[in-house]
Image 1 (cartoon, one colour):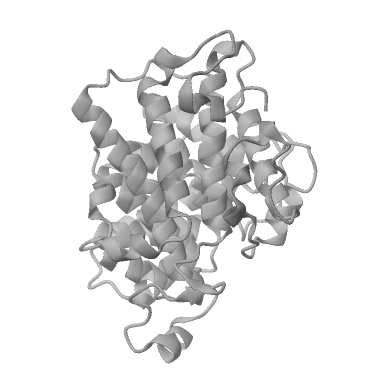
Image 2 (cartoon, rainbow, N blue to C red):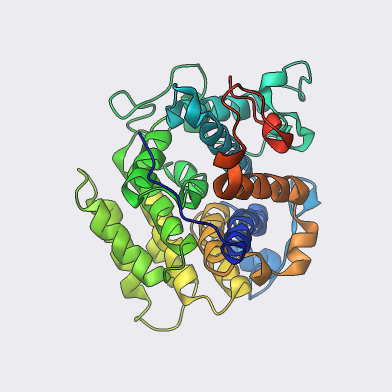
Length: 374
């Protein structure tokens, strides 16, 4: 697996990209937190608990307002793995799925351990963040997929029969789309291979690849409609793409079917499989008047609220950047300093990292926090 030459970064381009990286990660986390208190509830139960309009603001979950689920935790470890993969490009042993698998195993350790072990230096700084050790309802399929050291591959995937839970693999895949120096086909391939490490059903891993490619186009300044059309064209060459391609087409078609509401979003998300949640999220981002409107629409429906809003948030954040996010929601977001630090490290690596890498293994400044050997 290889990457094409990256763009030439001027100061304005660097600032725009940094804003989009921050926007993607922060807005996905905000969507996750907005949906966490009502995840698994139907629209009538949501209205009974929060009023006729449903959830309109952050509400308590897991003992605090602004708490995120395991979907945000996994997304952050995806970024951690991508930074390490980029740092290792010049070592001669470069295979990004391995770096991502190691990152996901570090996340899995947070679900077993009481807290970080500071003696394990190769774990890196993210695995030493104590707040990430909270267990936030990961599914059995996810825990089984990371229950041993064997890396699932497309030839030998983990959980190949789990069609219904693929949204977990999709929801952690936005960071692949931020590899803006890569060709879309390579972005899709990496997201697909990394999804198969835990969710080996084609609907799940192809939906993850599709989501990454859509984010990739948005991060490069494309419109969402164009990004979805390009993604459908790219998917057409992959066996088993039909459920994902059709789900994306349903999202595009639903825009012309009247005013958005809970019933329309729930119709798209369906039973909550990866392709359905992606479809609902794309629709919410397409019809959103602003970030608040899009995330509230994604949350207040019968499908998986946290996952749909997290995916919609990743799209809206990649489109509009950090400044479009509601400041009041950001102020209460769990882990916000960590998310910002990780986002800025990723943006720095993508725009300036190749000039900073030292083949001898001694990395200057912030790069030293991402060990090459693990």
